[in-house]
Length: 440
Image (cartoon, rainbow, N blue to C red):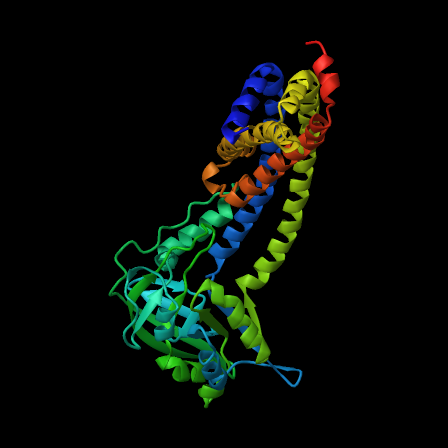
């Protein structure tokens, strides 16, 4: 019997009991959809958390927190920086020093107490893809980059007094903040005044800079970026004043960031630096722990969903068993005219596989619909329950990757075939004489 004839024979027999076959496919569909939707919650939570982590830190960034030498922790200096630059697949090494003294920044009639102020290597910042909202990277030591919210911090004395009065008199949780500087910042001159205490007396030192660029808006609304980036050509001079250190070149860096060429190289760069004794942290370190937890969590969800598929397989087993019983005479005729046992077994296995394939396909389609509906409806429900704004809800509740579809389809089809295996074996063992004597 040709394969085409086997298919025609299979479909003809299935049409005889359409309702029973339909109910069996429906059970398989529901089980497959339940498996996918249940597991998609784990995938969705994992995706949301990992995306959140990646948005808070550049994914190619490796933070260096010092170096261990003979069991002792040491801060990083210029010699260490050169060693970091020589590491394979490192494209940039950003070194920053923060100003620890009180800093007063003024522009025209507006002032602000600004923190942090970083002295950094602008060339390396550029290699590390320093993102600007407008303007350009400083080209000389007299140009600086300011944070996205820098203008908001600049207030006149009148605005500052009114805001402080509102804080004291207000009884509500929401207080309208001053707008700050509303003009164009690019090209404006600002004065940075450093103040330190020397034997009970305040000593001041002022620097004048031109704003060359404004940093990109932070990914999170609650982050207020009001800092200033100054080129490290003034590092020795400014640190000598702020830290009373004549030889500022030997001062350690406040922050050292290494940037790998690609995300795939972050782990290799981290491991190489660890071997050299550096204390490192990268997003891959945290993602490993998160992924391990969620892999176990997702495996548990898939296991629970598989139980539903196994329960649905009982229906497939019953359907195929009844099909064999009802077609005993047909099986006897097929064997009498010379049909091989393998052909008979294949026909029944094809029927159970067909039920699994159709059920899995419809289940996948339904699960995508449920996933979309959940991601659309849950933020609205949360908004109604909390009285908040759904714009602040940036969370994926259900996510269905291709790998989950493949896993669910393999489980559903595989269980369906296994369920039909026993009835198919029974069909091949039908006695020809007994089958031919059986009345329809």
